[in-house]
Length: 267
Image (cartoon, rainbow, N blue to C red; front, side):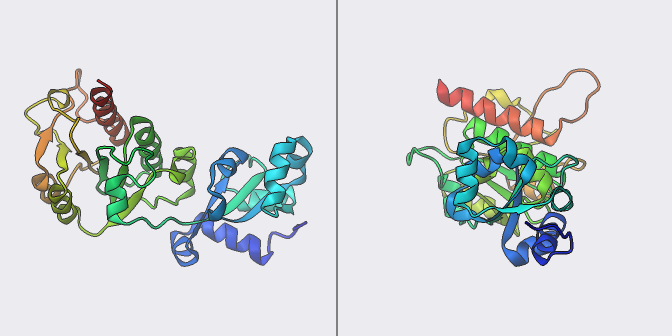
């Protein structure tokens, strides 16, 4: 059992939790909880840590999974040191990062249907980790096939993002790009129509046909899309609002648009 919070392996996990630079250098990130561990692809799992308290209440199935990974037992103090949550769940794992190509993100690398029409989210400078994680989760629910993020967006491996995805991080292809306008040209060449959620949209979002290959652009929480990116999109669309609300939360906007596309495709 690891009982010292100054243990080298413990310090490494803490660094992965706290620093995006460490995550990049180690090419790894951290997940918490048995649910996330069950959903993690076996080949991605590097290390697993568990407390005696969790083991005392664990099911035989959970214990089998933990021992399969050679879980290292740690003290409660060590788990509290490593975990990002106030009340740790008692299980924590180090996972290898994903490396998708743009082609895989466009095709929907993890989709069962090879003929699925692309339904993509393009996120520009989304800085709230909770928003990014929520978009992965709701995106999976709506049938989004892949997500493209600008370099100015939050680190997708931030612990807050990982918690918000509720496991979607393992199934949603994504990629960071240097230039969103440039990647839009690639999408257009692939036959994907790009829609910018924008206050200057002349038609409401539900007046368009999203049954064809589609990508929605969502901009920064405070400033929206940059002019260069918005101008590079094929079409501006508007989410109409009543009252005195001027703009919609970025994650909410993404959910509204992608679930409308999902509704149309079910039809």
